[in-house]
View (cartoon, rainbow, N blue to C red):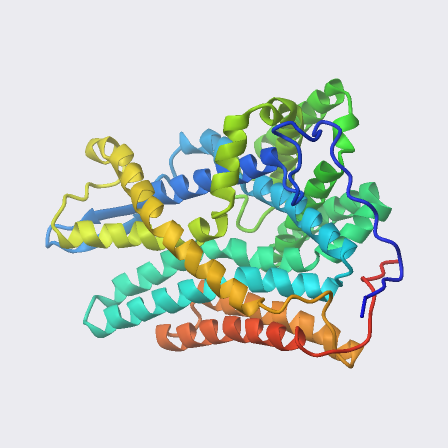
Length: 455
């Protein structure tokens, strides 16, 4: 039985700068080679940064001392303006998410089906990571390894996963945010921007850092909206002069608020939690990307690199820190010198260190990617057009439950509020439960339903 929607789905629109037959044109699956390249470059920057910031040194008694390298150095502040790529990550993610949602909606899928399928795609690889890392850490703790070192490893593995927790929530809201984008794109961006400023003002005025956590939603939803705008090609019709003005205004305003305003000039500091400074940086990155897109579209080499890395982006992101920490443990166990961070010998070994991490990732990522894809294909083996159930309330609440369970499962590993063993069990259990609930909803027949309505 076919599923009918209340409102017709708008056709997919190609960017005026992306025509069929050119390297930058969307493929048959709707992917854009330039967006794939941007996602790949952002991922490489993040992996390289985390690899460099893993400060470890051998103590005089042969122990292992850990620290965060590169932090609290004056020269790193201007560099942070170039390596803070999280806004670009969410812009590119917004482009990809809107592409997929519109493609699914055109086939008759619902917002619930989209939410469940995207959550499963993110949750299944995370279950593998948490299961393997949790088991290794429990075994290491049981073998008598220093408890402080085990806790430090657990912290370092979990830290980068804040992105995954936020991305799960932002992705789940794509069908709703897409409707607002299609109806009132400018007002949606303006409302989110005002919300970010209001949260920052309340946080600073009341001296309550916890208020700033609201911007974990507002800032990244705003960046996602810029990705929607990039997708529909509206900005591609802007004259280049307007793009240059937008870039200049964004950078000058950012310079002003970090020089005379309340924000840090270090863009990594502005990430925790995200602030209006990150919004301004993301705006500058949006205009710069729009200016560079025609040139990037023309590069077949760039298209090939982007497609290759983007296809395994999730696996690389999840596993790069376990690889880094595994290499540290191997070097420490074998007695290799581990120089003090920022020393001359430390800098001299950074290139070999980066190459070693890259080499291990090249070996392990293809295997892990095949395992993850196989598990995802098993979970989603039954292809359906829309999620169905006998109760609309059960369907809606079930889709929400899938997302909430996945987010809590990831957040537990971030907060470390509980000891290692219960945290590992709960995190894996919640993520696996999220997948299983989605699987159950995928099998229950019911009546047709519509996409979300936003007045």
